[in-house]
Length: 437
Image (tube, rainbow, N blue to C red; front, side, top):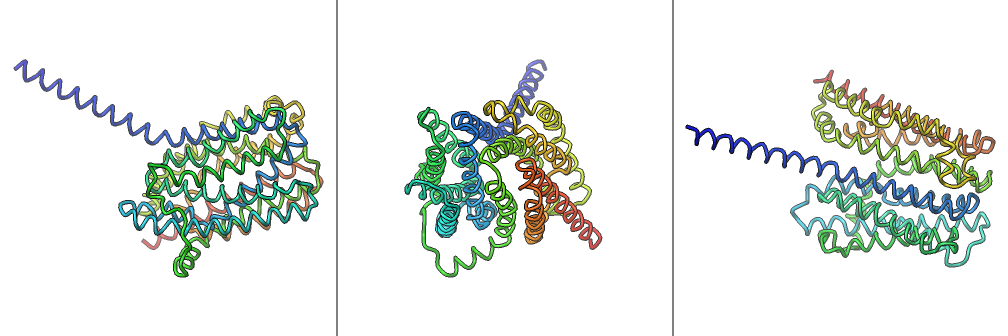
């Protein structure tokens, strides 16, 4: 009897130990991508601090303007095909031939669009009479292509079940390359050298990952698309691309107005403060991502009650984690901005405005993700167009007079407007479906 009892206890202990190991493994698997993405955001913030302190407020403003323009152009260049990749690739996971046939023409399409957008940035530099050396004009093209290909590769790796590799290659490795380049350059660092390190880093990593030994399914690397492939891919990605284009223009137009009407130092105040807001947004996205699988299933079933419960939970989690730190940043804005350099203290009002709108956005919850879950991408494009018109009008009225504080208000109001429209329409859709059911 005692042997039987002892055996049962051992079996129970073994099962409990296995359960704990499995639970720990699941937590690590789910938390590692979010943790790595957060680490990448901190690295980007570190790179911003190093560059701001090395260049000073005037020269840093020039660098940050071009980086912002390159990033937004790179996002537009994907034509929504990065979102299409993460959606379609899980269905092709066990067929390497189909995966290659799907990805290779997409990279060719995106590379072509990115080159055109990069050249448009070069034309802007010429039009504004900027005095850059001849080799500089390669940088916007290289940066836009690198960002766009990195986004395609990153979403592809996520769709193929490699989320950690996706974040490492898309964010961490290019940022490490930039930090090392800045440290090596030392006192010789200029805005042009910093932009070269940024652009070349993303370009080299974007194409270099295609030679990685663990990512053979991403090959062949490029293939000229057939007419059918081109039309089909552009048709599928068009609604998402429109949304990305309008959202990018809603950021770029006010940014260009600031660049044309204010000194470079004002641009530096805004972009460094924006980097802190981005860090909070990354944290919020990491929190929301933990509940997205459940929200996706509830949205697929149009289970209104469950969707409401999950959405409310995600919103409260975001506020619980980031509410108090946000208030601390608002209260300690001056010493935080001084981290970038003594002259950056003047950017404290800009930081307060951005974080203030960020708190209001947190209170609205993951509205963007909710609208995606209910499958209304065309409506997202319409809302992004509304955002663009409102942002452009406000920017022309406010930014020339109020500078970076005005731009922060325009950007924050646009962020809040998006959340309100997305949430309103998603609730309307689910209510209508529930009534029909």
